Picture 1: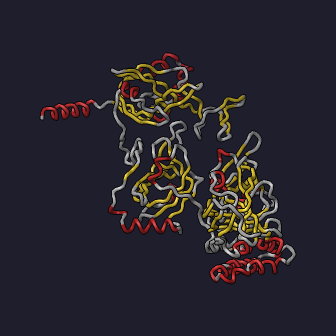
Picture 2: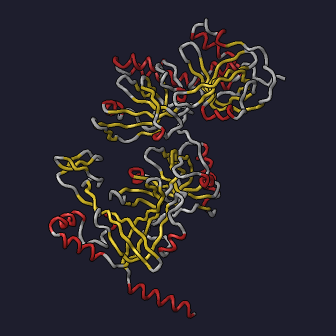
Picture 3: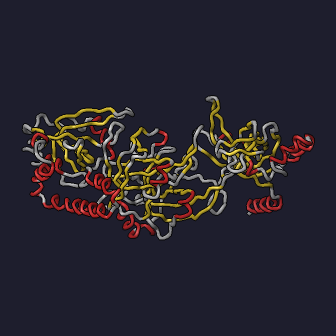
Length: 609
């Protein structure tokens, strides 16, 4: 029995790119060819047949393993549940298979004697060819009706074109009539294309610079049914396109450069990116029902335990707690950054903490148990199994996604009454400011190898300052960003801010040798936490070093031989390929002898009960 869908190739060939959903078609793969891209990645082009006609198609890159692992091979029978078709050169049509389902891969023969469907259409006028190619759809009412939204959107576009100015009407008409090209198939070798895409993310305007130039740039993420791509605008294009491109809106875009994206900047599942230029054309188009709003591969919270440090994940969950906005200071720069911690859960009954930063931290509202979808969250390697949400990611609150509706219904029915498991998250301080780190001796910290093995640990130890290194006690810093300045002939230059300064602000960078009864430890102490030890600032101390060396030495002597409760971060670092654990002071608290005495008395009383 022939399992292939009669007329499947005609259905697929006649399907416009704007119509990404269609009837499930069963076809046979009759040829497979590997194609290596500029980045070295392999994609597979296939020929598919319904026993009467065949056509060429490309497998989406996420399905490359199906070929490499032998699931899809020559003569395999597959069901195509999602695909898009476009005009490659104005005459030939090309299919991109988005969702194949393998039905049988041990077929020994080819069904029928198929011929190329292009041979039956190449001599027919374009309008008649389109009508002929969709004739088999008459037997499928649901497919015929799905062309109506596309036709209506074309009518809306024509009306929009008529209302445009005379100078823009020609360009707008050309863009509207140009067939859309799938984002997933954009390569540097493609020069004539027009994509229709939704802006899913728009960055703020940022500064860029090199040794000769300083300018502005911003970027957007563009999405269609085939995939996503990042696009960047520089300088003049910033002023032209930043007001036009709005997050959530749809556009037709053409004449941008397609370039290889640097791997360290890759966030989306695309090896290429677009660069807008003077000739780039961008046209706002009406929204289309069913056009993708977000492309995610959601990972269940329970599976986060399998992820590694810096892994990028997509996750969806219900916000069960919003800790509000608070600030932290970067120890190396002293710059304050606002953040917001959220606890989210899903139907696996697991909880994970997500940290939002900067502007998003200030504007987000987690009240009301909303569902949030996060694309591009990063597994935090510092505080354990927690997620950090970078500015380049995409966050949707109560998105119109099937997964979101299902999750919201589940939480409304069962969520509030459940107990959730959570990952160990060794965050050193709660939002209330209460430290939750263990108190150990120096020997215990070393024996337990706190900070080793790529993890970061926090602990408290009581120790006395035995020595302070005095050679490199401070560095010349920028008054604005606190980065180290470079001394020039005419002053001091900040390479971060690109500004010159007459004199620097010095910042402490101390190295303490501390001791307790069990051993010795060397601690790094940065400017923000030196106030308990040093009675004057680093800039004043540098002046004193030049004017009164004896008083300079006295400042360090006064700081020695005092005991503190040090709150320490331990982390493994490498120098000349040699691993060592670095200990950094996060806070130091002088001993409160009255409180310590009361605690000792209480401890004695407990032993006597």
